[in-house]
Amino acid sequence: MRTLVIYYSFSGSTRLIAERIAAATGGRVLELEMQNPIPERGFGKFFRAGGQALMRSTPVLNPLAMQPAGYDLLFIGTPVWAGTLAPPLRTFLRDVELAGKAIALFCCHGGGGPSRTFAHLRKALAGNRVVSEIAFYDPRKHNTDTQIAEAEAWARQVQTSQDGG
Ligand SMILES: Cc1cc2nc3c(=O)[nH]c(=O)nc-3n(C[C@H](O)[C@H](O)[C@H](O)COP(=O)(O)O)c2cc1C
Image: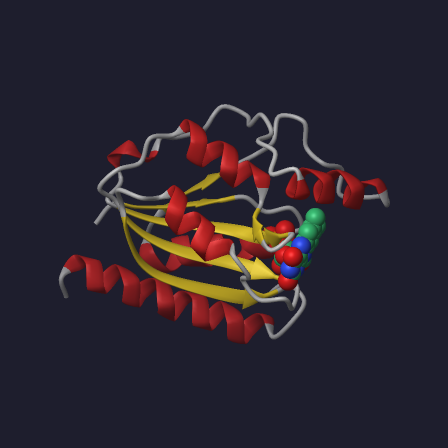
C-alpha cells in the first residue's frame, strides 16, 4: 500500500512522530513549509503563530515536494494551535483536492488535548475515509520513547488494517 505522511511542525514534535510513522510503514514524507516561516526564536513567534491560528489564516506554502495523488493511505499530522489544526494544514486542504483516500490523523498538543482538531480535519476531508486518529502530548518533551513506540505500533496497525490483513 503506497503510504504518504503529510505534516506541518513548528517546534519538532509533529516532525518526530511523522518520521517514525514513515519509518514504521515504509512511507514517504511530505513536510508542509510556509514560504514566510515563523522564526523559531524570540517572543514574537507567539504573536505571529497565535495570530495566524486565531485568524484561521491560510499562509502561502512552498511548492509541494510531491503530490498525494499516487498514494492510497495518507497519515496527516498537525500541532494543535488554538484548539485546532495549524494554518499550513488549512492551506494544504484548501488547495489540494483529496478524494477516496484512506486517511489516519495525528496531532501533537501541549496538554490541552486535541480539542477540535480532529473534528475540523474530518470536516475538511469529507469525501475520504478517515480510518483512525491519535493524539500525542508534546512528544519531544514528554515520555519520548513511549510515545514514539505508541506511534509506530499505531501506524503499523493502521497500515495492516488497510492492507486487508
Ligand atoms: C501558536 C500556538 C498555539 C498553541 N495552541 C495550543 C492549544 O490550543 N492546545 C494545546 O494543547 N497546545 C497548544 N500549543 C502547543 C502545541 O500544540 C504543542 O507544543 C505541540 O506539541 C507542538 O508541535 P510541533 O513541535 O510539531 O510544532 C500551541 C502552540 C503554539 C505555538
